[in-house]
Length: 243
Image (cartoon, rainbow, N blue to C red; front, side, top):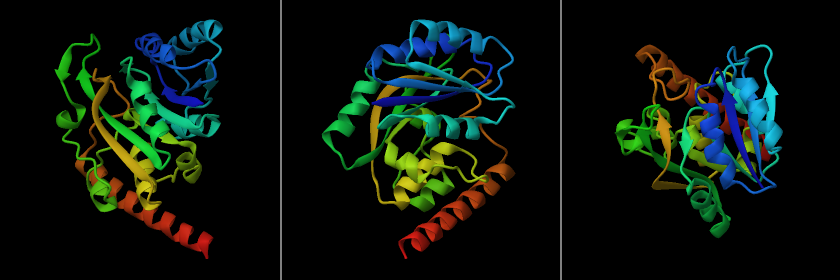
């Protein structure tokens, strides 16, 4: 079973297109968990209309607004699937995304995390760059230190086994983004990670994106310090639990 985990906020311009790119790739037993973070536009109404036609969509409204991290954390913890795909509201999945990723999981049970590349496009699907990894100078690595210094993992281009979710049930309060934390926990647990070069979706840049936005230098430095502290504390907790 697959669970697609999405956090939405004021996504009325994008949500129908995104869901229409996802649902045909899923089986009848799969699900799309949507946690809406108190949208002020018609996002909830549009999702509810699609939900009437497709019961695989499960909508959970936040009240009050919890922020992107807690919303994704909530969606992940509600997911019933064996494999979880993270998903942004404003992107567009290519028709081979799910099949390509699932092939990796199905052929190798030791793989716990799969990430891939994407084409970067504007909201009209005009090409900006043929690779998000190139556009954002991402260098995916299995090094914890290097991943803390420069995170190469992007949540909406990641899927993972529920066991990794279970290892990260509650996100630490001080982490900046969930994707980096999931990758670091996978590395800390020596889980096998597969990084594909395939461009399996359009990563939409329209100026109002919640995820993928650049942060001030000072905030980035503090974020790295916080992330290093969190993974050290995670390591201490693991050591204590094994003792």
